Amino acid sequence: MRSSGTTPLLGFFLLSHVFVVASSTWLENATLALLERCQVTGVGGVQLFTPDASAFYGAQWTRDLSYMVQYAPNLLQQLERSSSRLLVEDAIRYTFQRQRSDGCMPDRVQADGLAVYSPGEVATPFADHAMDNGPFAVKLVVDYSNNWNDTSLFCELEPQLLKALEFVNKSQTGLAFNDPLHPNCTYGFFDTVAASGSILFVSLLLFDASVGAANLVRLTGCGKAEPYESMALGVALSVDTLFDAQTSLFLDADMANALPDVWGSAYLVSLGLSTRARRQQVMNTLASHRTLWQHGQLRHLPFPLVWEKCFDGECPSPGTYQNGAFWATPLAWTVPALLHYGHEALARSLAELAASFFELRSQGNITGILECVNTQTPSEGALAYVASATNIVPLLRLVE
Image (cartoon, one colour):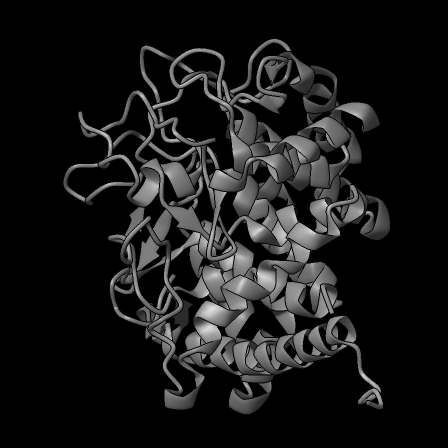
């Protein structure tokens, strides 16, 4: 018999390519719909961007807006062109207008103008504040300046940016430090977790934000680069103290919840910190732990570990939400790190995540873009979750 001209293997890759391209187009459209529908009107008519389009979270979270601006600027700019308003700049100002006098940035700002500085309910917050508020606020302005090619907002807000980063509590070594006697929340995607001591993820955010701000200071002449460079250097020189040779990952903290942080370890690699050999070791470890991944999404901790101490007395049930569910959010920095360190096949399995969203395309259903999933059914996170879409939109094109 004559060959059809396409081997089974080649046919598979051609179909995979077509699927990824179709998924990418659908997901871009779905993400644009999420960004349109997640808006609520705040004081003065400012459009706020909430974390989801299902009205579950009814305020503008600093970290979620930061992820939108970092990973989906082209879609936000498309919204702005259709509305003829500076939607994103107005939303950023709304947050910065509510910075506390001590430099603390809001965890979230409500439509009625109220600023909330800690995760938890307004009447019963977990702590005084979330430690990642300041770095995310700085990253928000830095990424806006770079992606919109407009540094005027950075120059205007630079004194507030420096104050926001200086507010972050630090150890003598320069890492972000959470007082075990009076702990605050650390990174918002595990804000229920009461980690203490030197904190990995907030330290990485501090480094990322400081480097970005220092670069813009040198570009614009607004402010002084030295304070930012000093904070970044402190993290760079000290972060290896959190490396755990037993697991070949970096620990979330060195006191309470001193457990291997999957998201943080991948983020550290994406930032180029530590040594090349250690970064390779981290990514080899993540690639070898297949139980970390489900539907292309990623667990916070290596299975079967769960967090040991949480703010509300009891951590979420094992396997659910921030205690063992699987999330799309960290793929934004994990997939490029996998590609860079030789794990292309696993990086391309991102298509599995796209598939779980893509199955709903015929109905135009965006509620299937979940905050997280557990081992059986959707977890107790929000439907139509924006970061789950914005943080993977650039990656589908990357893995083509």
